[in-house]
Every structure is written in C-alpha cells, then in structure tokens.
Image 1 (cartoon, rainbow, N blue to C red):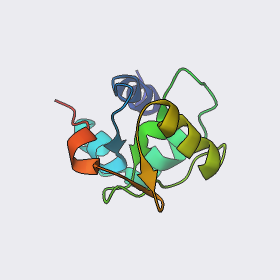
Image 2 (cartoon, helix red, strand yellow; image 1 turned 90 degrees about the vertical axis):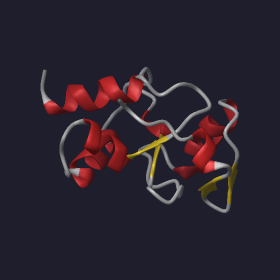
Image 3 (cartoon, rainbow, N blue to C red; image 1 turned 135 degrees about the horizontal axis):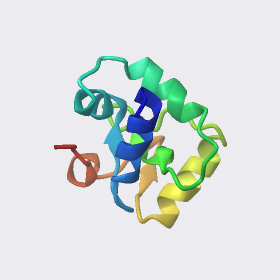
Image 4 (cartoon, helix red, strand yellow; image 1 turned 180 degrees about the vertical axis):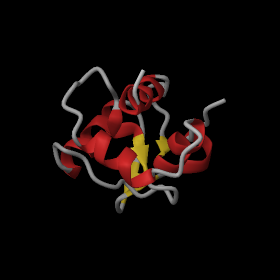
Length: 98
C-alpha cells in the first residue's frame, strides 16, 4: 500500500461528527510530511473519503478542493459546529489514531 492509500485509509476511520489534523495523520504514519498529506487530501475527488474532516492543529479549517463553503456545509451536516473559520469544541471532538 502506498503513502496516499494509507492517508485515505486513516481518513476513513474518522467518524461523522469528529475531526482530526494533518499532524495527527502524519504521526500515525510515522511521518512529518504534513504538507504532502495536505496535497494528497486536496487532490482527493472520491466522496467516500471524508478528507473534509482534517483540519489544522489549532482547529482552523484549512483548504478543501470544493471550497470552504462546501467544507462548512459538510461539517454542519455531520453535526460539527464551525464559527469564524474554526471548529467549535475542537478538543472534545478531535480524533486521535492509535
């Protein structure tokens, strides 16, 4: 399995209503390639991979290939509240990988 496939596999583990970070994904992959992970997710057009659930380490949304408005809409649909470009209650809905 290549690096990209591992990134997608981890993204699929994030439950609806939860979020994780580029850094957490990288840690789970024993990597520091945060930017590479960001590019992989930005270039994902497979709707079965919930890449919108990945945010910056401070809870800010970061980019999304369909635009931030779409990302906010997906979060809202999943019960995640976004205010001023940040995840509300970020620490309590954050997903960590084991």
